[in-house]
Length: 496
Ligand SMILES: *Cc1c(COP(=O)(O)O)cnc(C)c1O
Image 1 (tube, rainbow, N blue to C red):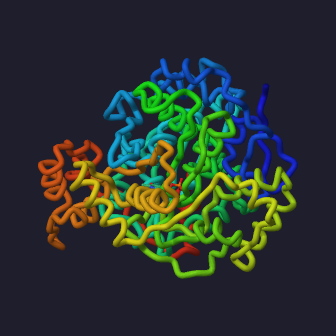
Image 2 (cartoon, rainbow, N blue to C red):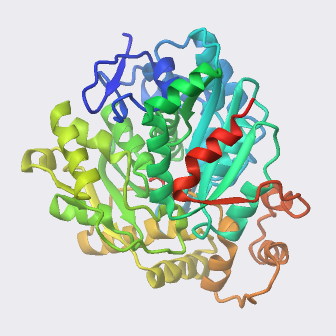
């Protein structure tokens, strides 16, 4: 059955999947949601026999219904190939009584590659399907990982340009270097004097600026988004939760139908929402554990039913989760309000006005599958250390937020349900933090590449190409602007 997408805030648009992917954000500023959530129509046993690309097809075809089989399979084939350093694409590793779903084996060594290696293909296919004549301009705000993954995906893709905004002082050294060395005639990377929320709000404003849109359209451009507000990001992320379950089953860790828990180190709420969609499609999940760092706005929300962004923004060692406005939560609100778009609009008006809102007890009850926790910096460091010392397994600081929250949850609840922890970045991406945590001295001025070699010897994990290739790469982007300079940057970039 065809699935159409409409806004969480009630606008009258009803778009096909490919149209929603092209547009990114609804005209009223809301997020696109499917008019119903389809049930998985292939048995888990059948999925067990499949490799990642085939599981991807079975999941994605249910939500992206206007793509033909040929189109979708082609997109998948282009995405999940040898850009990944393992044929499994998303391997599952057991350590310390949990299963780590390693989502960082793609080109930029963070989980964003799982969706951003396919999004450009979904988008260019969508452009063809819909007879789009304009050039697609991807505007993206990044807390560090999305930017590079999107740049890598869209670089030199005909018919597209991409402009990435990142917080100049809010990303790791490797993250920044990955972005500012990006090649491709159609790419632009801009640092802003602000934090990730400023960047994200700025990009949303550009999207909903009707005047700017009109002018750009006259010049032959149309905006879209590679952020996780785009359903073309969300849908590919559902795949790996089904895949993880099939691996557990294949390895004899589960009986078919057994429930699992899923732990996700969370920022913008995209990854964990994808897991929740997987459950609505039939994946047997008991609890979703939403793990935050010290920016624990989501933890407070799940505890109190009040979302309140009025607080200090803390820079942590898990920068990709330094977020106070978790955009994708709006989709969960929509489902928890049973599609009451007036209710969602009201809550979002509260968020942009007073910076807070409160949900009703009925909505809260419909989120009963979620538990939340947060972990401080010391705790995350200790967790990295113990996993290394006791199990010889290395995790990055983001994954450690998930692992730390899970450890506390398990101790408190004695819940022994088999648990999958989303492992969202390679330790190589945040080496200074990882090396310090495992007790290896790191000099302030030690070169990142020397550090990588040292870690490689110690861990036996080869230095990924994503790091190695940065060593001699030329810096190609050096623009830094205040937040209110973003619009001008876009205009400059789009000079014909
Ligand atoms: C983006 C990111 C997260 C947060 O994911 P959301 O989908 O925004 O919740 C966690 N860890 C890493 C390494 C990331 O890049």
